[in-house]
Length: 164
Image (cartoon, rainbow, N blue to C red; front, side, top):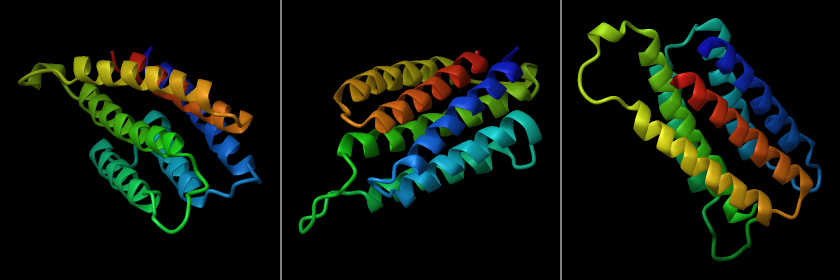
């Protein structure tokens, strides 16, 4: 069941990436690259399993930090991308990275697991991300931005349900 949900989570991620790429009013290559990295990580974890989840997690976290640095507010010019959109994308990458590592650990033998479970923390992070997504959808004026945020939130929600 979790493999099916994980596979279904790829569809909203692809839709979100298409929304970013289709926005001709504001060309946003860093966000498109971030969406492509998330989509590749999800697709590999759901279908192929070529790259270990820990490496996808490291790449997603590095991409989130890179995007946050790239889109930081500059003093001389106003960024064309709303700060809420950058916050949503970077937090989505962090939550997705956590879900990747948890799903990779979930695939291993559970009788060898020691310590506290990461699932409740990640479930809380996914719920918090959903609340942020709902708030962001209500504040974004552009239809493509709202669609991208909604698709990313749906993808994270499906991965969180698949983790459990």
